[in-house]
Length: 170
Image 1 (cartoon, rainbow, N blue to C red):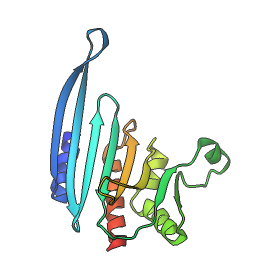
Image 2 (cartoon, helix red, strand yellow):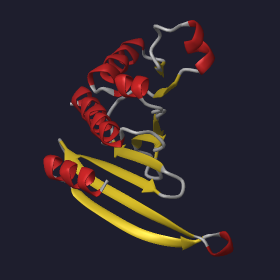
Image 3 (spheres, rainbow, N blue to C red):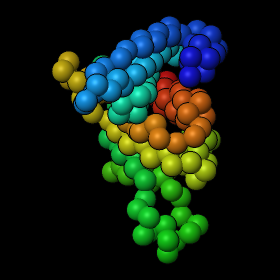
Image 4 (tube, helix red, strand yellow):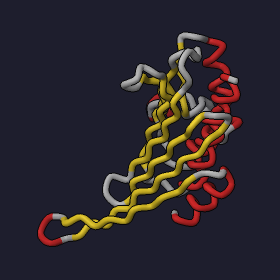
C-alpha cells in the first residue's frame, strides 16, 4: 500500500504519511497496524483519505464543502443481496436524494468514476453521505471496509468521485 499511496500522492500533488504501530493483543499476541493518510487539494477543496490496515481494516474519506454552497443531502449504499437476487440487472450501488436531478447526476457519477464497476467486481460496500461538522459546514464523507482485493482501484475511483462532486459545485 505504501507504493499505491505514494504514487497517488505524486499524481495528485498531495501529502502522504504512514504510521506503523504494534499493539499487544490477548495472550501475548502482537497486532501490527498501519495508518495511511493522504491529503490533497482539488480546486481549493481539501480531500482527506485515511486507511487503517491490520486491525479494523476501515477507510474514511472526507471533503469539507465551502460555506454557503448548496448541495442536496444524499446517501449512497449497497442494495441488499435479496434485491439483487431477483433484479440481476439492477445497479449494486443505490443513491438516494430528495432532489431527483442531483440523484440522477450522482448515479451517472458512480459509473463515470468507476465505483459501480468496482462494486460489481469486488466486495466494495461504501457508505457515502453528507453530514455537518462541528463548525456547521457540510462534509462529504465516504466510509468503507478494506476487506476486498482492489484497494488501489477503490482509492482512485473515490478520488474521481470527489472530484466529480467538486466539478458539480464549481
